[in-house]
Amino acid sequence: MLQWIEAAKRGEQSACEYIVRQFTGMALTVAYERLCDVHLAEDAVQEAFAEAFMNLPKLQQQEAFPGWFKVILERQCSRMLRRKRHPIVPIHEWGQIAGDQASVAAVVERREMQASLRISVAGLSPQLRLAVQLYYFQGYSIPEISICLGVSVSTLKKRLFDARRMLKKSLHVADFISVFHDLYEGGTGMLHIVNGDSVAEKLKKGGIQGEILVWREVYPHGPVFRHMDADQNRRQRAQYLEQTLGIPHNEYIQTCKNQEEILQNFGKYKEIVLWFEHDLFDQTMLCYLLHWLYYHPLGDTQLNLLCIGSYPGLELFRGLGQLSAEQLQTLSGTWQPIGQEELALGKKVWEAYTSAEWSEHLQLLKEDTSSLPFVRDAFEAHLARIPSDRNGIGIIEQVTLEAVSEGIHHPYELFKQVGDRLHVLGMGDLEYWYRLKKMSEEPSPLLQIEGLTAFPDYHDSVPSFRQCVVRLTDLGQQVLTGEANWEDMIGADEWYGGFHRLT
Image 1: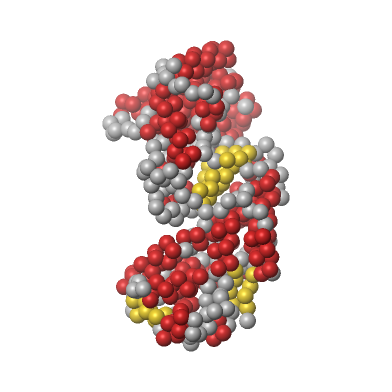
Image 2: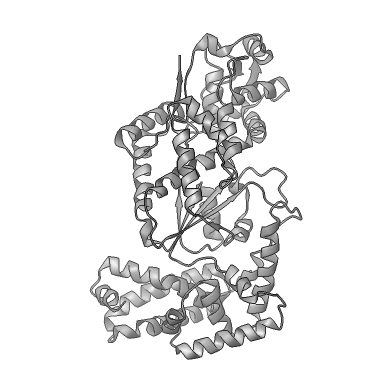
């Protein structure tokens, strides 16, 4: 650490960034202990780092940095306390789960115990409480905490002993230490990979520890390949996505490069957590990442997975994006370690999904996929997208025709209805507009869209699109009843994973 501080004194940016990464977790815990507000704590830490780096040349002894920085941080917290006026929410109240459904019973039971423990910890003296939070909640070692707080190792051990003794009086559990260890939710050396910007923003709002990478891809749409980072494969996919979804070619290429660069540097993180859900959209994303990680030895990096298909109180769980920041926070720390079995299955699923041979897609359902429990249903939904022999349409077109025939005539209402019925696909609006457009095109339209001027695309909304009226054509009615085969009329030119159905 001393050489990093010396380099930071010389103004080297990389050294400053390293010091921030090393001390942010502890600093946030110390600041929260004083301020009892996660947002104020973040502001205090940011201001403290700015003040520390500005005055770093004045520090005579590099080894004194931890205690010196702690004094700066505490002074900044005191300034904020004098200014603070708005109400706060205690951290132990974040873990409440809405609803009384038990579809994730284990999560509910665990959070109840954790909530009780947090309440008990909050009743400790400030010195004992801070030691418990840093050691058990954040996972820092005793020597690290000793340096940060400026207390001896023996004193710190005594504080932890006293804290456990006092807490045992209020919590009567058989395996007390395991309850403590269950509270560990990771520190700053973590990378969370999530499926969308909405989830990322809510995790940040909930105070998740570590960095967040939003993986931006739509693997259920367009051509996919075993090796997505090959230049030729990437260019082919970029061209297709621009033509069908309006995603700019160069923007897609740059996004891929940016997220893959972060993935390539996974070794700098102590832990990686994958946040995904049950549908095809997420399962293909998950299996791509597992396939990639299978071929890149993790070394000392721990890989974890949080993957759910339901949540208490939600009758229809569509995905993590439905949850509030508080609900997502209740899931923090409930992830499970990923081992070789999950990596190997993810590899196998991705290779089947990207195969140009349809027989390999079908073969996967004969395999044991239990180590990734949502894969089977998601893959069955993938197979159901293929046009049937009966009427030449897949499950998306079939359910759309059924919904229109039942009286659903407006595009956004139609998207919601079809999305709810086919939630296992995890289909986004742009994907669905592509399907709807194709179903309404001449010379063999299944749908007539009255009032249509243009479909919404990647960058532009079309306000008038909400007023459009969707109706079945005569051909659409015939295809719905099986009297006509649509694919026989229009031919086939569609990608289903790596399989190109072309006639």
